[in-house]
Image (cartoon, rainbow, N blue to C red; front, side, top):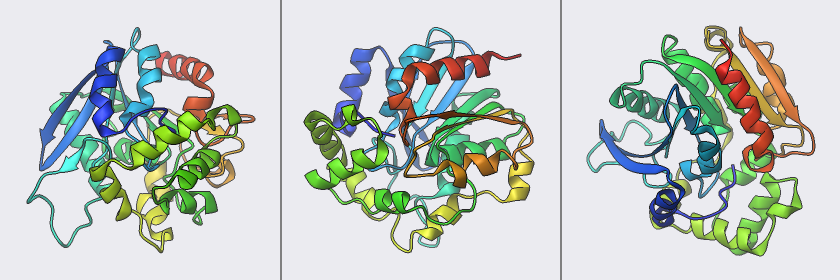
Length: 294
C-alpha cells in the first residue's frame, strides 16, 4: 500500500491533525503504535510490507469509516513506531514474520479487550489477518483481504522487487510505479514523500534485514496451509486490483475463492496493488456493506 506522506516522525503530528488518536501500547516485549478513531463495532486494519509503510496508510479510510465503526490501525513491529524492546525475543527466533506479527495482533486484541472484531488486511497484512482469523475463530467476525498474501505461491517478480528495495530517489519512483496503475500517483511530491518515509532510521534498518534472499522463503513463511484456510469460519471478502503487479490476483484471490469456506471477491479493473489509494470511495462502500451485513 502506498503512503502519501510521512514517516515515523511525521505520523504523530499528522494523526493529531486528522482527529485520529495515536498512542503506544506496550505488550509482551513490544511497543505497538496504534491509531484509533470512531466508535461502534471494532475493525482492525493491518498494513502491508512495502518499505516506509505504516498504519498511517489507512488514515483516509479510517476517517471515512469512523462514523460507523471503531477503527484501529497498528504499526507492525519493524514498521513505523512499533518495535521490539531491548532484551525481548531470542537468537533462535527471527524478529519478524508471520508468527511474530500474528502474536503482536493477538496481544493487542487482548490489551484492547476486543473479544469481537472484524479484521482487514492489505498484502502482507492480509496474510496476518488470515492467520489471526485462524487463531481466534470466535473473535474475528468478518475478514477482508486486499491484494492479499497468505497462501503458498511462487515468489511474484513484483513482490521480489518490493522486498529488495533500497532507499534512493529512482528506487522510490520505481516503487510507486510498481504499486500503482494510475499515473496520477507518480508525482515528484509523492516520490519525495515515499523516499522520506523509507529513510527513517529505525524502519530503514529493520526493513534492510526483514526479507533477505532467497525471498521465496518469506512467501512460504506468510502462507497458511490449505487445511488451515479451510478452518477459517469468518465470512471473508477478497478485494484485488486486476493489474496488481506485486501479488497477481490469479496467484492469490482466484485461488482463495476455492480454499476459504465462506468467501466472495471483488476485482477492480485498471487498478494495481494499492487499491485502497486508487479506489478509496468504492472500497469504503464495499467494506461498509460487507461489515454491516447481518
